[in-house]
Length: 86
Image (cartoon, rainbow, N blue to C red; front, side, top):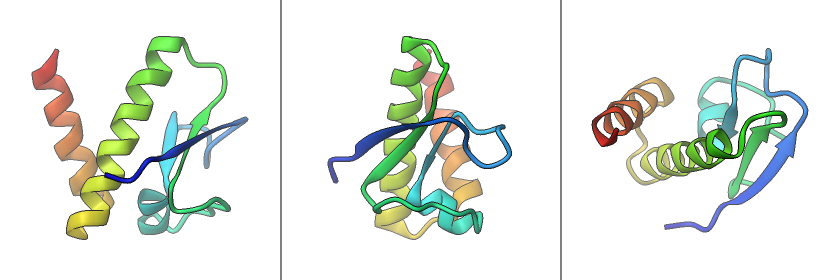
């Protein structure tokens, strides 16, 4: 697994995203001026939400990187696993 860097940013896209990774941004055709090993996190989230978002974005990025799975499907897959975990 790649070790991802975390960068806190004021806003991601239209403001509806709490986190973003390179592979998701690329698939969504969003501007992502960071390295492939960077996860961006929107500022202003609770510590627990930040931890959850980092975990989500890392798993999503790895799934997309290793399998070539598109964003929507990888996001749904990771979200489903997160729900089972709770």
